[in-house]
Picture 1 (cartoon, rainbow, N blue to C red):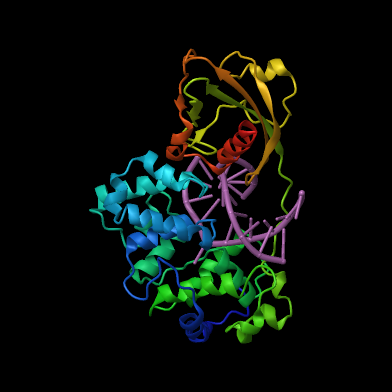
Picture 2: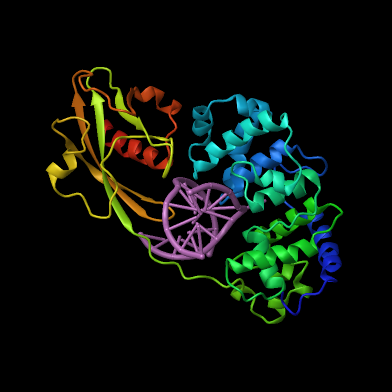
Length: 361
DNA sequence: GAGACGTGGGG
DNA sequence: TCCCCAAGTCT
C-alpha cells in the first residue's frame, strides 16, 4: 500500500467527484439515475469490454430493441446473437453473452444474482464486470477497477508498480474509497473522469475536480502514470482467399469457422491457412482450393490488423458451372443478396468489398 | 502468468 | 501511414 494513501481520501474524493459527475457525466443509453435495469447494465458491460462507448451505443440499442429482456435473449439462437454481434469484435463475448442469458434464466429464474461472487460465476463476467454490475445495478460497494479507474488511481496516489500488480493495488484502494451511499455513481464518475479528463495522453488537469489531491499532479508527472510496458512487435501473416461463384446462380461458397479460436463461429470465405510465410508457390496455394479450377488473381490485397498479428490476404476467384463440388464439413453456398444474413466479421466484409470492386468493373 | 482474442477512431 | 488505445475474460 502506498505510504501517501490516507483513509480520509474516501470522503475527499467522493465529495469532490460526485458534483462534477452530476454536472458533466455522460448521458449513456444504459445509464439511468435510479434503479437501472440489471439486464441493461450487464449487456452494456459485456459490450464495453475493450470497446469504445461510441461503438457500443449502436449495438446496445439494437440488442435491447430486439431482445428487451434476458428471457428474450436466452430464447434467441447463438447464430442470431453472433449475427447481431458482427463487427463488434471479440466474438467469444457473444457466445458468453448467450450462455450467460441462458444460465440466468435457467438457474436464477431470469433475475441476475446480486453478489460479486455469484456474478463472477457467470460466463463472460470476470472480476471487473462482476464488481461493476454489483455496484451499478445493485448498489453494492464493490471494488471496481477498469483501465480508466486504474489510471486515475495510479495518478491520484502516484503508484509506481507496473501491471498486473497495479490492478490488484488499485482494487485494494478502491475497496476503501468506494462509498456505501450510491457506489454505482461513484464508480461511474471515476470511469467518466478517466475517459473525459484523466485521459492516457494529454489529460486536462485544469478541468479535473481531483487535481488538488492528485499526487502525480503535485509531482508534475501526470502522464508518467501508470507505468507502461513496452510492447513487442506483432508478426505478419499471409493467406489466400478462394472466391468461388456459381456461373448461373451467382451463389458464393462460404464456410463457418470453428467454434473456438479466432473469429469463432463466424462466417468466412474459404482460404488457405494464415501463416507467417507468404504464399508464393501456386501448387501450394491450390492444394487448399475447394476445387481444382482455373483460378484468377484479383488485384489488390486486404490488410487487417488483429490484436496480436497483422494479416494480408490475396484473393483468387473462379466460376463453377454447377454445384458439382461436394461441400465439405462447414461449407455452404450463399447468394450475394443474402450476405446480409451472414455473420461476417469485418475482415470478410473487406474481402467482399474488394471482390465487388473488381467484378463490377 | 502470458498470450489469445477484433475493431474503429484519434493524434 | 503508423501507433496507441478502449468499461476484460479466458486458458
